[in-house]
Image 1 (cartoon, rainbow, N blue to C red):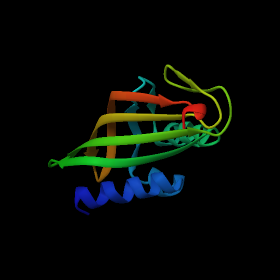
Image 2: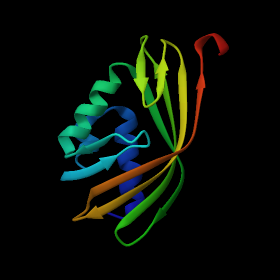
Image 3: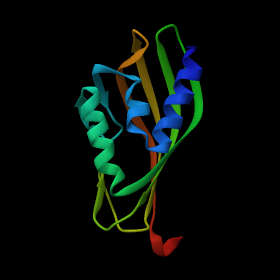
Image 4: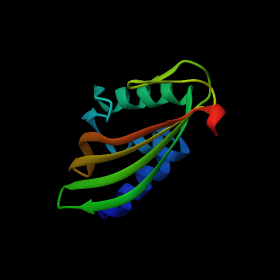
Length: 134
């Protein structure tokens, strides 16, 4: 599968919250570090992390730009998190129910045997919009 199509399918499964769909893109021992600096090892650890987060926030990712190489993808991403409850902690930010956190990031996906073997993300901008400001 071409890398662009692979990534688009991955993001669609991720945005749908389909853990079995997006986890098939991870190598079993994938190394992952998000823009907040959280590091995880293994496909199941990533699924567990996002499954837990899903209980507290609604999240969507939009792809702003995408470059593909022979075995890598670089993506400019815009993520939006909307808190579903109070005291949701995402990196250095604590949200209350209805608050929104917008993050712009760059992520590098290294691919081995058709799956993501390493994912490194860096946050470029973050903005919080409090519920009473919406």
